[in-house]
Every structure is written in C-alpha cells, then in structure tokens.
Image (cartoon, rainbow, N blue to C red):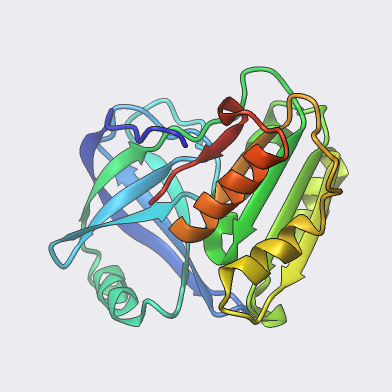
Length: 235
C-alpha cells in the first residue's frame, strides 16, 4: 500500500462546471487556488463538506499552468445524494470550498513498464488521470485496464477509451458483477488474467473498496507480485 501524502496546503476550490453523465455519475470541474504545487496523476484531494473532510480521486492529469491555479475533475455517483445537494447549492452560489490538495502517493513508475489497472465503479477516476499522463509522456509499454461495475449501464467514458487506444497499447476490459459478494467480484476480475501470468516488472494500481483492495492485494502477492509493484490509496 502507498503511504498517504500529507505534503499539502489548505487551498480553496470553486466549482466551475457540472454535468450529469448517462451512467448516473456527476462530472464536476473545480478551480483550485492557493495550492503550493499541482497534483500528479493518481492523486486525490479532500473537500470540507458539512464539517467533514471527504476524499475524492482526481480524474484528470494536472494542467500545465505554472501558477497557483489548477483545474481538477471529479466523478461522483448519485448515491451520495445529500453531499451532492450541498455541492450543487455551492455551485449555484459560487461558494469557495476549503480543500486539501494534493494528497496521496499513488504515482506512475519513473520509467515505462507494463501497467495493470483494477478499477471498481468511480474508481476509474485515477486510472483516467494515469492514462492521460501516459499519453502526454508517450508511454510505450502495454497497459491493461480492468473496470468492474454492478450494472452494464454504469460504464461511461466510451469515447475517452477509444481515443486512448489510438495512442497507447491499451487493453480495456469491462466486467459486470451484480453480486454484493466481494469474493465473486474478485473471482471475475482475476478470470481476465491467466493464473500463471506474472508480467515482468508490471506495476499494479487498485481503486476499489477497502475490502476489495486488501483481497486483491493478497491474491496478487500469491501470484508472485512484490509489494513495491502494488499501489493503492485507501481513501
């Protein structure tokens, strides 16, 4: 597991755009001001909402601006209805939210190696930022992305992945698992990878529930992956 990064400065954020995606996910755009440095792909931020610090994975690579203003995208599922209503009110009133930005140490390797992404639901957010970054730095190694949801209508970003496959050696897999049993879901995920597969120097990135991350981590170790090749932020 990656250690959480506390090297941040409290900054302010304003929601600049908001629109609903077909999969029942809200796509939210923030403008961050007052940060000491920009985020890296795979990081997250925390927003103070109703006296609670809530973590959100960042869904885009950092912008190229060289000042204290950064633009951040988030994907939030509608099940967080109360919190979404608070954010929507803030959007309409142009409220400045207190944020802790950036957070997390789930980074890409320094040198190109094969990558394996496991994402559950809106856990696709950090994987989107990784893919954007890989295109920007011309990543030459293969990437496999396994994305699981509970229902086929919960997938989104179709055009984005088609675009990524123009520039990257991207193998995109989608899995539907209606079961609430984490073990069933993980079994379906690992069915996408041959049992004897242990790709040399492959870095694995996990974005899922705490239970799923722990179980996938254990399964990967059983298949020969070493800890330094397995990355996740338990947020």
